[in-house]
Amino acid sequence: MNVTLICGGPSSEHEVSINSSRSIFEAIDKTKYTVSLLYIDRELNAAFTLLPDTFSIPEGQDLFKPLHIAIETHLKETDICLLAGIHGEFVEDGRLQNMLEYYGIKYTGSESAASSLAMDKYRTSLVVQSLGIVEIPNTILIDLEKELSYEGLEYPLIYKPNTLGSTVGVHIVMSETELKKAILTEKKSGKYRFGLLQEYIQDALELTCGCLQSKDGTFTTLPPVEIIPQKSTFFDYASKYEEGGALEITPPDHIPQEDSDNISQLACDIHELLGCKTYSRSDFLLKDGTLYFMETNTLPGMTKTSLIPKEAAAIGMTFAELINFVIKEAYTDV
Image 1: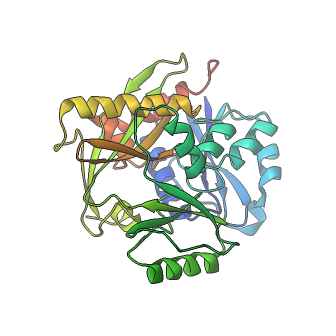
Image 2: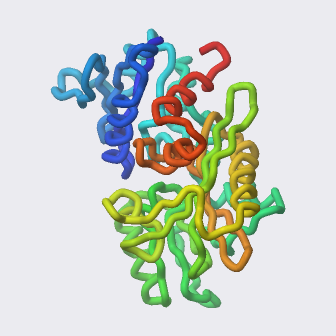
């Protein structure tokens, strides 16, 4: 089977994508799959190459074409595109999937509509709230192009982008002065228009949980991961990607088995409610017996030490088996 691994892209997680893709290539069963690479640079140009033995990013401007031309030229012969190694805006918001759908290219993971929904944290919270079985932190959607009224806000608060991943642009603000500074910083970045103000649930246990969905619609539940940041007060970018940034414990040590099982099932319920496909990961906070939903990631990190691979390992699934699952369970005729 011909599999094309897609990585890179214009998002803030470009380098994370390259690391994930390298790990996937190293783990993938090359007796089952012939692997090629479509690398997308930050300007949305792309280069295609076969990966016979080692993972490498194409170099040389003569190899690069505008992305839509590269897709139409190079991906017609591939059986399926593996999107597990690409992250962040442009793909988690469904834009890349939309392009692949237009050209009739099969790919792994959630489709464009579910990806767009899950990337929008505010809309996702409203949908998940309809379940009626998990709390949502009090949240306000704000437009950075409009003046914000600071009256009546209770601190501390979390300020974060509505549509970025990997906790990019997240600020804990303790006062109006800090909030104004955070908003000014993010407005200057120009990366997005809408932000969220969310109640800061202090001293909560951070938990995340993935789920696996087979193409027949059945689910494999995974145990949650308990996250204890070591370099920050919450699971920020440094905690995720720097060595020693966080302790990640699966199954979790500090919650009853009943709560753990409930979170595993809830991750599958949310996955299904949002219309996700094959796999996803949802983030939660637990405080004083109350569980809060934070967000769902349709393309979570996929190195062998990332969270979903750790959860899969806890149920006896190797990283190579997880990658095989993501490919084989993507389409009924693959």
